[in-house]
Image 1: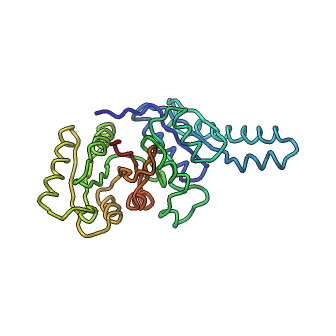
Image 2: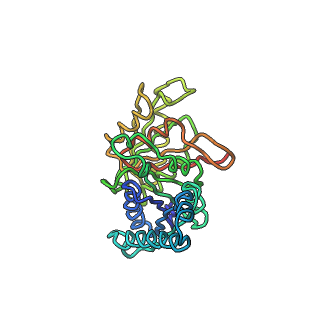
Image 3: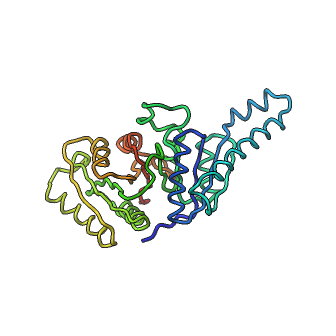
Length: 288
């Protein structure tokens, strides 16, 4: 069970959160030898306004792209932790989320890392908001997406794995194992009894199922802990326990199918992503 990441896509609007994503990408690239692609999408309406309002339409548009390209390349060149790794910049024009999803295909990316909010959402309130483009990328991306808030702590010593152990968890557990083995992490498995929608709480059965998951993690040579939390809301419990476990990353699974090509986050998942101070990886559930 290995971590196979060859290319990381990092969308940026040059906001603090989106540039923080590059710090996390650099950390992962160092451990996986992955290439990093820094993407900026010029919004269609911004681009069109230049063409409509300037006399030298072609020159103005080209000048904007040249300036953005120079800024992207400067960021990549000056990033101290990306030295020696493959990196490139990419500029696309159109709807931001749509072009990010297109770039996932054209660049054959294995992972997306992006800020969970952009320039339009700043300050303390931004802790509890997922930007609309991030939300749509989470819904449409066929691969794992890591959302970040800041670059204050860029490491992966502890992984938080919230589980509903009454449901199919193989993919989520395997993902945690692969990351833990790659980074030498400890996995902290937590389940919240109030999260089990159609489950009559039986602590003995719950702990038994949790132990089976923990045994699978340990069998792969990964250290882990388990915790059962009762009678609190799931997002609050997960976020609080993440602080206790000193988690550097949380892994959650999308659960609500939006259509035959994409998945979304449950309301609980959105609250975890929005409220987390550390990166959250959202992965798609297995297709039935």
